[in-house]
Image (cartoon, rainbow, N blue to C red; front, side):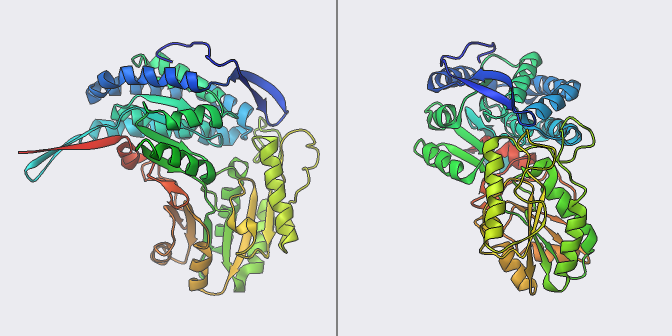
Length: 464
């Protein structure tokens, strides 16, 4: 805070657990309103000077931060494996690798972004939007920090970061790298604490101008209501219940294998995961058999083992929630293909859930409507393309999705019918420069690329 580490003004603490062993990893401060007040005050003191810097003056410490992320890839990986339980291979490639890519993308964007343009008889200036409260989730802890903090700093905004209480250690590591990069005091501030205490205080704070939140839709709604009373700008990246639609003529085996890999990645704890697989009724049972075969390759295990593809969930609370969805789906008439609600064999310790495939799922079942946030795939059958579009859109969410077809043009035409912010066609690769965000209850605003930078800018026009 304000350029140095200091004790919390609150006496509370948070135990950080290793979800694979259920043992305590660390204890961090449970900051509250007083810590938030101090952090926001530091950010406001730094705001005018940081906002007045040139792009070159911002690029210098941001480049050093990117280089710090590159130099500490192994430490980042080990930290995420320990506090989140992410399998080490996935942690290295995604939890450590993706933030490095995103940070680098903003260096390029900052160097080229037009902060001033002439429109008719006006000159329009893009200026920093003010003090940013960044409230980040536990499922991709460093990626979400970088996706908010780096563009905010690039835009000239000081930041107060409140990371998720389940995964605060990688946030502390990031704060250390920010400090080593030589940003001015107060430009970046970290407050660890719970959502109801530190998070709510940040969203409501009169000294905060922008709230960028990633988390559940229920909490996001509360954040938006709180921030709205202060007329703050709000960016929300919330829940998802994404559909992957396999159209007739598509490569069914490739589509199903990709869907299983997608939904089991990060132990199923991905807001954009394709948790609903929609297949035409003529090939539905074939798809079920393919999913069963593919799912058999995903056995839960020690996340530190390079052979492990599915680790534990982040907490006991999350494990019981996911198991409840599985038992609930079976009670509603779904058919268990693979997995189930019981503990995986040989893993009595740790917050593990069996990778699960459910067939016979209908649109009215909870597992087809609500975000599970675990390694659970729900398979639905459709009659024709109109029915497929109806099923895909039959959710309050609209974050992401997939479409598979015989050709790209057919897939793209169908994707235009889906109410979702980012849709992959025939397995298209993730693009960190494309805007990421959702329709409907999946949120407001966009992250990544130019659109992510613009979330932290406001515009002033001068008429001549």
